[in-house]
Image (cartoon, rainbow, N blue to C red; front, side, top):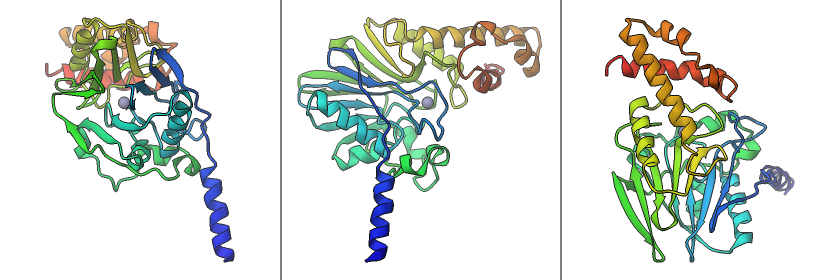
Length: 299
Ligand SMILES: [Zn+2]
């Protein structure tokens, strides 16, 4: 009995964690939680990523379920105060775990979880990045729940009488499987990590040319709202920061290669000082040059 009491006390302590999430209205019927421009740590507990809800009339459509079970639970509780609707569909834009570990909560609600086949490569037995870096209280009840429906190339679903287009970027861009969500009647697009606008993007799992090409496609679309995976800018210009950064880097590396330079020349000559004051410059910029150089060397 004593042991049970102790266990309950520990369990309630674990479950007491709260993020303090507040939904921000992006457009009519579109709300997002915007994460901090930081790396995941024991202070933000993974609240460094965006997660969005769209009012489809009879259900909330969720785009990216966030970093933990408790995050997803809190996000849903807060959005339910705006409108009490069930969640039947959750879309995972890509495999980086800050974007989908909230799936565990939505699975309990019985939602269909859609994502690219790149998720097949994730081993559910391996410890996640999030698990290693945030507090155990915040990670409580989180298990890696993968999509139960895969999207190949493109998929159209209708929720109520509204069409939703899920489109996979061709080849690699930010990762090897980047899904974006297009709601034509709202001229809205959820780009996942194809769009970062308040920090230097991360290229390590992707391909610079593929990324530029898909962003140019997105820029050519008639859109009013573009929400990225990180950053609070949600207008038509939301992709510009990432696109300009990648284009400047690609051009610079091509020049280094044309004059027979190597990787260390590229790192030295491509400081790209306009971005020096951006968040994640120290952590990501050299690594991005490194990744891009290796791709472009063979192009
Ligand atoms: Zn990512």
